[in-house]
Length: 239
Image (tube, rainbow, N blue to C red; front, side, top):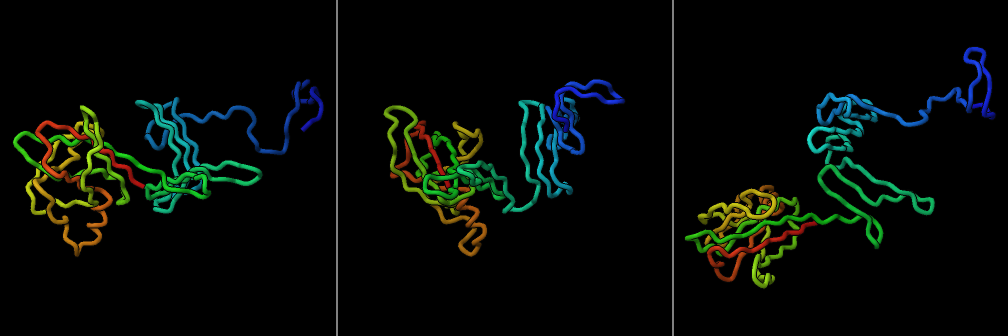
């Protein structure tokens, strides 16, 4: 690089400003456009940067302008332990305030040091259908963990917290139930009501199925059947 601000070159004449030679660095704004790989979108307002060699094991920064737009940061390694870290530097040491793993785990830094699992949440609404007297309701929270806290709150009136028996997993076997259209979020049939608690679905011998069931469902049981048309908001938090 020249030290002066003006120099001359036999081929180009006077050059104002320093110039660089012998390096491959990019100076100024780098614009990458023409395609979103993740969105499979060939568009001049899309762009993608790939780090690595094999598509099955690369890092990818991808922007897709389609619809509401998506900015994706991908680690394409197919592994539960594959990770994406967000790093910062504090007092000369690299810190990781947040880490994402391939199994869906999201951890963040805590005041005690180290990374702790970030809580996940789900909400839905229990409504007693006409002509029914269900006391137990299966909640399909699908949070991927059996370590949950469930709150049941009146959806109107004093909006008091209601004490209910909570059990992880699906316990509707042997009972006749009916899906109840969800009034909350997400909008789906996420509640199944049964007259009373049944036996555990899939049987105790099927530990794999039971483990998966515990990470997806929870049972909410009232002391007495709620009145028809009475709404209860259910909030499930899991870690």
